[in-house]
Length: 259
Ligand SMILES: Nc1ncnc2c1ncn2[C@@H]1O[C@H](COP(=O)(O)OP(=O)(O)OP(=O)(O)O)[C@@H](O)[C@H]1O
Image 1: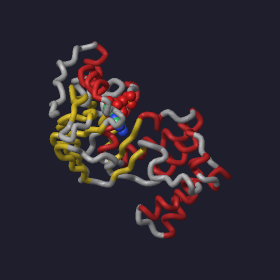
Image 2: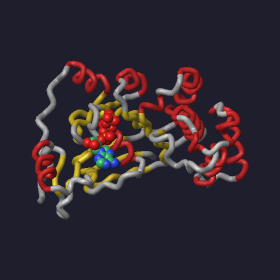
Image 3: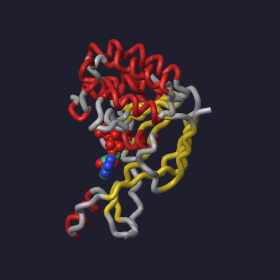
Image 4: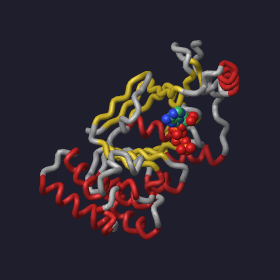
């Protein structure tokens, strides 16, 4: 059964090019809550700090919070793109991610080749790959562009292909960034039904979004992040209601300084 368990999950990014002593000092003083120096005297930004949560089967979770809160970082960590520097993350179940349209695509290969590569990566047999190719070709509506290297695709074309490929499979855990819901109107009209059945078929969905309409429509639970910490976690109306009412956040704790 699909599940996600985070226990003290922490993600940090080193900030390179911050070697000059005075700049480092100024940065640390200004952003003391989020930035610290590590044991190697590097300046690091704490993108996620000590997160604890469990997501189980049937939950559709929205990650909400202001810019830089950590939503995308958490989504990417769940997808296995970032390694935690602290704590533990246990993800059980096959993941399908609609996070970066270019992720997992070879820019020098054509759309069609990328579809085949994805099928191979998923361990599909020839018949499965042919079916995937036919389905993604029809659904993406890319026509002759399917035989052009994806490097030359516009953002909208990349979304179409990524969407077509991802929704042709049915992952147990669906990870999604909101802009996957923001394709052109024509395409989204067609995509809507498919997205709904994808969400329905998944055991767990996690979506990062600023759009409360999307949250209310698709989600059962909201986790609110602020400066890399969870500040609220509960039913959608409870979390969004507090955000809309402007309920003040608890005072943030500074990142632990080591250097
Ligand atoms: N690759 C990276 N290198 C360095 N810092 C990063 C990196 N990715 C994210 N960060 C930092 O981590 C913090 C969280 O960023 P993140 O993109 O996860 O926020 P977000 O909630 O998704 O924001 P937005 O709503 O603007 O997309 C920010 O301070 C950001 O600058």
